[in-house]
Length: 419
Image (cartoon, rainbow, N blue to C red; front, side, top):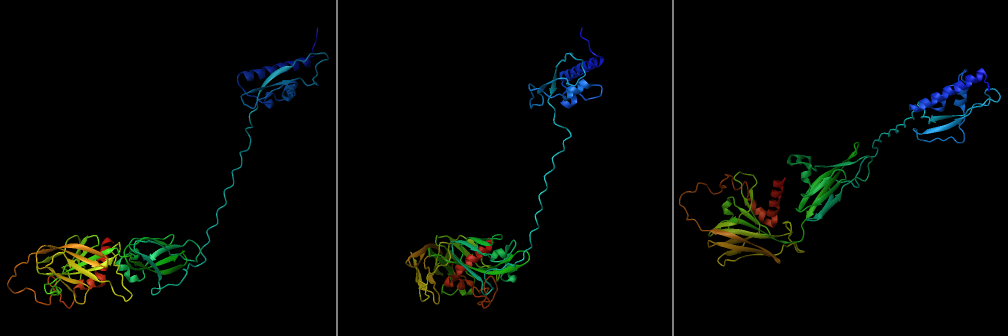
């Protein structure tokens, strides 16, 4: 019969109690770490043996938290069991230990360093050359060509912006600074570039003001749009009196016949010193026996005067013809116009030819109205419908007919209307 000492019984009883607790914990899903399996006490030497036992070579463990690992622990060789006493090995199932809950959180990433403030501009802006009202920067372009002109400073720190200004500040009452750019052109205040396709001849003056916030510079600019090659003829027709004088000083109507046959009617205003009324459409009309003054100009594809003068400064010859043989044609003294008198009431077709180009248009001749008797209500020397003295305002059409100025005036009226 094998006997055991009292201390041995206590040790084996402790071992059995600890094993039962571990098995029960695994059965109800309680996860225990090796450190949690037993805490050594002075009265539980066997529990201390299990808690500090090293897993045998056959022990297995997985990285998955829910997987279980098995470890074989043997009683410490220093246990006080009696000689010859048998030692039972205990197989204890232990779950993988969870990650420590008291670990410190990672330190936050440091905030990016604040960018230093932008340095204030320390170099004044300046254009490449000094310009003025009398010595501006000249830009020339042909009507219909693309305008691409950079008006930028060559010196200046910081961000530079550009604006359009007046050459003459008193012009502000006539419109915004941008109104003095060529028709069809646009200015970019960021790049300082003038771009667009311009089609109206003339000269435009304005300034470009550059600034970086602490300094500014002004560039005077003059854009000259030149006419293209002649592409056709534009005819001017004006009312005349029977004797060829300018309607005895009374207001008169004019017609512009463009190279494609379109007609613009220009009627004098009933209000003194105001612009005439412009109507797109109509037809030259005259009373039987009266006369019209007819002239023409060479124009480019956009209707700009494009007269080709010779080396001596002479304009090419122009001729006016009629399809009605009864019409009387004679040169107008001191003018490039031709006076055409219409004895018969009907529709007549006139043709203006310059060089190898021409334009034709119809004229309506209405029957003559029988003369009335009685004293005229207006005296000679006054403008009918206006009351203005003839010495105050010479009929504006005479000047317009000279050297193609009428066409320029009409295009000015059109541009003013569009704005």
